[in-house]
Image 1: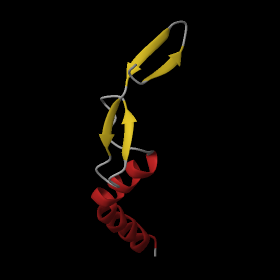
Image 2: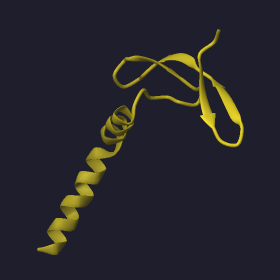
Image 3: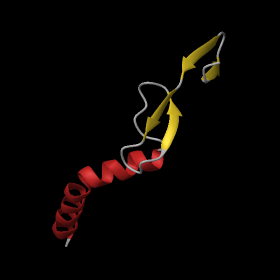
Image 4: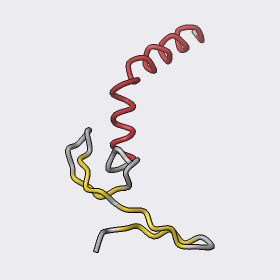
Length: 67
C-alpha cells in the first residue's frame, strides 16, 4: 500500500507521499509532491543563506540612521 497522509475535514483527503531528499541538509523524507524541504528549520536555513546578507545590511543601515 502507498503511504498517504490523511487530513480530516468534512471529508478525508488522501495525499500521496513521495520519497524526497532535502536540498539543504540531504535528509530523506516522505512528503507531498509540492513539498521541497524536510522541515521548517531547513526552509529558514535556505532563506537565511539566500537573503541573510541583505537583511543584515538593511539592519545595519537602520541602526546607523537611528544614531
